[in-house]
Length: 125
Image 1 (cartoon, one colour):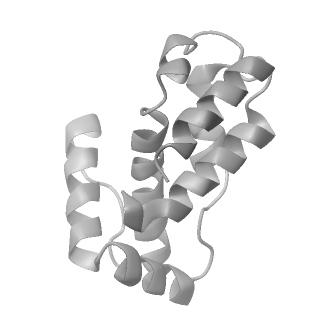
Image 2: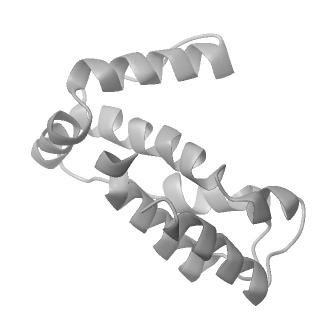
């Protein structure tokens, strides 16, 4: 996941900013779904091409949506939607690497939880 270091860093910053007092199960939504990760068509196109490859991103999104929703609804003609859905999927995978978050999934996170989650995510860098 080295090529997606910036997503790990984004997750870490999100945990630091939004983690304490949040339910563990809401963290992914706050960090990767409340706002676009990448804004702008040109920037999104460049980010996908540089970090993943267009076809790899599309295939990953297609498989994820098919598996989770039974249908694929992302507009693949929109680079911004592709980049942000890919970031959403990878963000879920990144946060799933934290055993603390898994353990505290249905609980409000305290300062110690946030420190542990950040520490676990930093190991991915």
